[in-house]
Image 1 (cartoon, helix red, strand yellow):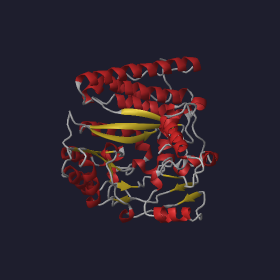
Image 2 (cartoon, rainbow, N blue to C red; image 1 turned 90 degrees about the horizontal axis):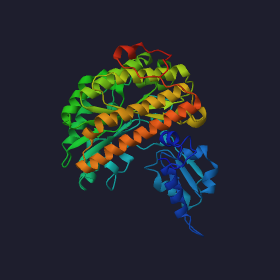
Image 3 (cartoon, helix red, strand yellow; image 1 turned 60 degrees about the vertical axis):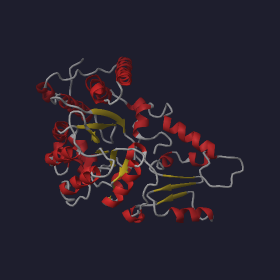
Length: 424
């Protein structure tokens, strides 16, 4: 997934690649282990992280990787290996949607997956330019396929199932014009999973807040199906990316559908309220340095965080990530946070991490299901670590001469913030 540490999370937490992320270190160790003296076998690399070698082409040879395979090739592996064996395969092979497998051609898992993650669909269709998976052709796995894979996980005692998709609310989507969820299909999916032997809970990996605003009743009904409540929250990862309507229109495309890009900040606030009201806990991502982003755009994201923090009894976390040029935006420049950060984007990152610390202080004890001594250790580590990170950010701001905008203390104040800010 992240062989050379070029993914958004790794680039964000390693000062633009100055430090070495764990994923890269482990990958390099693995490659070193397979390079035995006088080897007669071939080393082949594929998967979602293969794109890293488009930006570091020289590393294919230096690491001794004979072939790199791009694209979905679940059904083409025997053919690819046959070509490799007969020395008729090029060093780099690329496969597109034209040859992507149908659901019937995707083999089922043979063993349990990490955190009981089961794939229910591939592809998206919302068209965010920074996203690689939106380029995939949408496909939906039938219930019998999903049930067989869930059984592989429940057989080893996994009872909480993750439903992996690029946007769970687009499962079996019918109305591509408005992108309004197929309510019956989505609810039937959750009902089916909860009815499987050994399953006590299920939750999605990804979803878009605009779907919650489109159909609040769908969120309410799913919560009832999975028995969500004050002691059993539904986690979901969702992308805010920006608080700027202009950037939403330019880069996010149909992420706000069926609403307009101009409504995006309001959708995020309302969607968060709906999710929280039904015991959903969103983990939001924010992207720093999207192509065309101005300081004004970044301040709009700070404004949006102010508004979100004023939601009564709100629960969410925000992860600031740096822009990585994949998807339609391949060829654009990486956003190097260590070299390209300015006051506005620093405030976005600072406010996002500050909110994570607020959530740790307020909610981590309640949401952690561990024995009390272990839970106390986890919470204490989180609180100390969070304050340590904020301390580093304060010192960095002083060194760079950045001001930190004071958070809004009331909803009225949050709604009144525009592009400027009072000095903290």
